[in-house]
Image 1 (cartoon, rainbow, N blue to C red):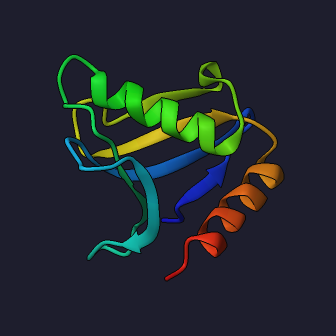
Image 2: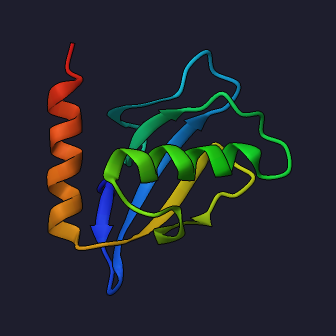
Image 3: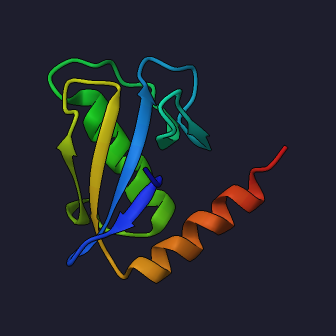
Length: 106
Protein backbone atom coordinates (compact mmCIF):
# COMPACT_ATOMS: atom_id res chain seq x y z
CA UNK A 1 0.00 0.00 0.00
CA UNK A 2 1.33 3.43 -0.94
CA UNK A 3 1.90 6.11 1.69
CA UNK A 4 -0.79 8.26 0.06
CA UNK A 5 -3.47 7.84 -2.56
CA UNK A 6 -5.88 10.11 -4.37
CA UNK A 7 -9.53 10.32 -3.45
CA UNK A 8 -12.32 12.32 -5.06
CA UNK A 9 -11.77 15.12 -2.50
CA UNK A 10 -7.98 15.05 -2.18
CA UNK A 11 -5.75 12.38 -0.70
CA UNK A 12 -5.48 10.00 2.22
CA UNK A 13 -2.16 9.75 4.00
CA UNK A 14 -1.00 6.77 6.10
CA UNK A 15 0.84 7.64 9.31
CA UNK A 16 2.49 5.99 12.29
CA UNK A 17 2.33 8.44 15.17
CA UNK A 18 4.56 8.62 18.24
CA UNK A 19 2.85 10.62 21.00
CA UNK A 20 4.67 12.09 24.03
CA UNK A 21 7.77 12.72 21.89
CA UNK A 22 10.52 15.18 22.79
CA UNK A 23 9.79 17.22 19.66
CA UNK A 24 7.17 17.53 16.96
CA UNK A 25 8.20 16.50 13.47
CA UNK A 26 7.17 14.78 10.31
CA UNK A 27 9.69 12.05 9.72
CA UNK A 28 10.44 9.73 6.88
CA UNK A 29 8.53 7.24 4.82
CA UNK A 30 8.95 3.70 6.12
CA UNK A 31 7.63 0.28 5.19
CA UNK A 32 6.27 -2.28 7.64
CA UNK A 33 6.74 -6.06 7.44
CA UNK A 34 3.60 -6.42 5.31
CA UNK A 35 4.94 -3.94 2.73
CA UNK A 36 2.66 -1.06 3.73
CA UNK A 37 4.22 2.40 3.56
CA UNK A 38 3.59 5.08 6.17
CA UNK A 39 4.97 8.44 7.26
CA UNK A 40 6.40 8.68 10.77
CA UNK A 41 5.06 11.60 12.81
CA UNK A 42 6.06 12.61 16.33
CA UNK A 43 4.01 14.93 18.55
CA UNK A 44 4.45 16.15 22.11
CA UNK A 45 0.80 15.68 23.02
CA UNK A 46 -0.38 12.72 25.04
CA UNK A 47 -2.79 10.19 23.54
CA UNK A 48 -5.65 11.28 25.78
CA UNK A 49 -9.08 12.44 24.61
CA UNK A 50 -7.86 13.14 21.08
CA UNK A 51 -5.03 15.49 22.07
CA UNK A 52 -2.42 13.61 20.01
CA UNK A 53 -4.77 13.52 17.00
CA UNK A 54 -5.29 17.28 17.27
CA UNK A 55 -1.52 17.79 17.42
CA UNK A 56 -1.03 15.64 14.30
CA UNK A 57 -3.67 17.64 12.40
CA UNK A 58 -2.11 20.93 13.53
CA UNK A 59 1.42 19.81 12.51
CA UNK A 60 0.37 18.52 9.08
CA UNK A 61 -1.78 21.57 8.35
CA UNK A 62 1.11 23.89 9.18
CA UNK A 63 3.60 21.87 7.11
CA UNK A 64 1.36 21.75 4.04
CA UNK A 65 -0.02 25.28 4.38
CA UNK A 66 -3.61 24.11 4.70
CA UNK A 67 -6.36 25.02 7.15
CA UNK A 68 -6.84 22.47 9.95
CA UNK A 69 -10.40 21.99 8.71
CA UNK A 70 -9.01 20.41 5.51
CA UNK A 71 -7.62 17.45 7.49
CA UNK A 72 -9.40 14.74 9.43
CA UNK A 73 -8.61 11.38 11.01
CA UNK A 74 -10.62 8.78 9.08
CA UNK A 75 -9.10 5.68 10.64
CA UNK A 76 -7.05 4.90 13.73
CA UNK A 77 -8.32 7.58 16.09
CA UNK A 78 -7.18 5.48 19.08
CA UNK A 79 -4.26 3.74 17.36
CA UNK A 80 -0.69 4.71 16.42
CA UNK A 81 -1.46 3.79 12.81
CA UNK A 82 -3.70 6.46 11.33
CA UNK A 83 -5.23 7.39 8.03
CA UNK A 84 -5.66 11.12 7.51
CA UNK A 85 -7.95 12.56 4.83
CA UNK A 86 -6.66 15.79 3.32
CA UNK A 87 -8.89 17.95 1.15
CA UNK A 88 -6.53 19.38 -1.46
CA UNK A 89 -5.25 19.13 -5.01
CA UNK A 90 -3.35 15.80 -4.95
CA UNK A 91 -0.53 16.89 -7.26
CA UNK A 92 0.18 19.97 -5.13
CA UNK A 93 0.32 17.92 -1.94
CA UNK A 94 2.63 15.42 -3.60
CA UNK A 95 5.05 18.21 -4.48
CA UNK A 96 4.92 19.59 -0.93
CA UNK A 97 5.65 16.15 0.54
CA UNK A 98 8.55 15.54 -1.83
CA UNK A 99 10.01 18.95 -0.98
CA UNK A 100 9.71 18.17 2.75
CA UNK A 101 11.56 14.88 2.50
CA UNK A 102 14.22 16.32 0.18
CA UNK A 103 14.92 19.11 2.72
CA UNK A 104 15.09 16.70 5.67
CA UNK A 105 17.36 14.01 4.28
CA UNK A 106 20.30 13.23 6.54
